View 1: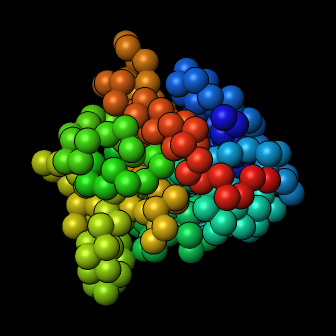
View 2: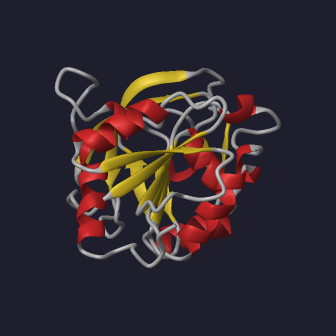
View 3: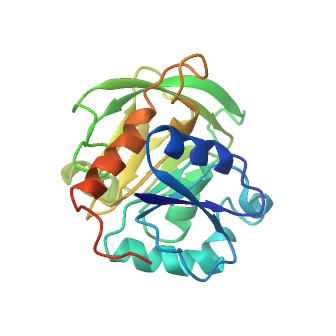
Length: 230
């Protein structure tokens, strides 16, 4: 399985995502923001960081990177796409996911470990988890508050598209304590916490992040998300 990891100017966690993919048994493919092809990958990860310096809004410029045209086409065709932190922001700016991410309600940068409840295990990124399973994942963001209008929130809740929810305290003021959502089809998932930092014993608060990567590898092996390969 070939899983692409996009590097934008300002990406910080692309190498961590690449390492996580490799540790979990897939081939990691480095993608550049100016690429006009996805180089025959089977899935794509948009990593965390500060793409294009977070100018205008987080993810607002990255949305117009040439590679995102290919990512949008592939996601529309069913390819699994995961956006982590800044990647989540880029997915929202690209309208692949609904809602937006705004500055944390306490106006401070988060660098903490958080507990998440897994509420949707039907996506290619979550199939190895149990529904309502609680996992611990690292979180680091300044603009991590997930917001949407009430109609969108009601739709996400009714359709089971809230994939992760913060357990216990809400670290950034996200509406409904939402930590991650999916698109209608379920192949595109975005979340603020960083699973790529939680894949090795002794590094990070847990190894719970491995489930994201083993899930998509299993989904691809089963043929899920292979409708588009670019």
